[in-house]
Every structure is written in C-alpha cells, then in structure tokens.
Image: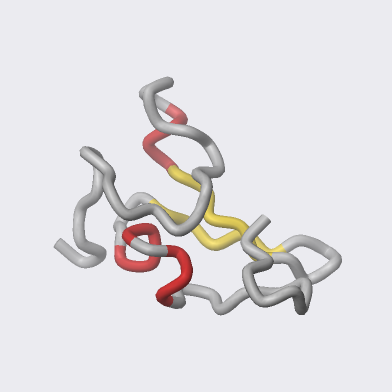
Length: 68
C-alpha cells in the first residue's frame, strides 16, 4: 500500500511513487477503501518485476516515460 502520510490514501501519480509516477507500465489501482497501489504491468510478462513494487521506486531497468 502507498500510505506514506498515514491518511490511508496516497497521491495518484504523485512524487511519492518515484519512477512509477511517470512510467508507462504503471497502473494506478484504488481499492474500495481508498488506498492507492501501483501495479507494474511488466510483471505480467517478466517475473523480475514485482506486481506491486515497494514505493518509492528510485531505480528500475524497465522504466519507460509515459507517452513515449
């Protein structure tokens, strides 16, 4: 869970997600309780990538800028 400020919610696409905030492979998932998670779509085809990476991600060999 990306509950960095203790509120139970996180900033979608915010800086606290690190590289995931700008990665084309990241999908923001919001639970029924309002918690925000970042799903790494690369995990579907490559087991080297965690499904829900620990945030903030500061290094990732699979990172690609969103929109490229």
